[in-house]
Length: 111
Image 1 (cartoon, rainbow, N blue to C red):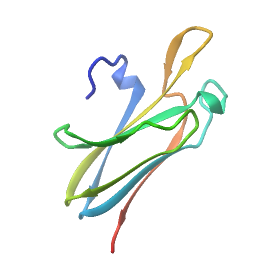
Image 2 (cartoon, rainbow, N blue to C red; image 1 turned 120 degrees about the vertical axis):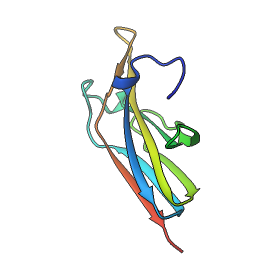
Image 3 (cartoon, helix red, strand yellow; image 1 turned 45 degrees about the vertical axis):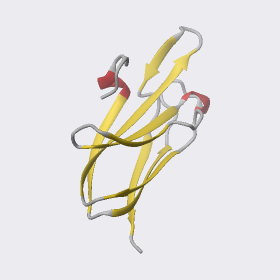
Image 4 (tube, one colour; image 1 turned 90 degrees about the vertical axis):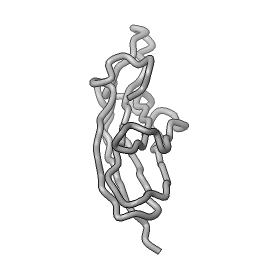
């Protein structure tokens, strides 16, 4: 989906959801420490796409261990969510992918 990325299949989870339309909240929260066993070495980024790969919105401002949130008004349909999980290993100078476990929540807000 993204250019100039390595190990795309290892660094991202892709999930789909359907909505009948309206304000949709998408949130990821770290739930586990991952292989580093350190809450400061878990970074999530969250991306929302149409099914044909057009980026709608993203959230990557959080630091290690922080939650990510996207709020978007969507038309009825099916959408794709990408969750990137990684951290930089300062000892080996390598990027470690799928660094933590997380919970993804998708909720449509009805007026």
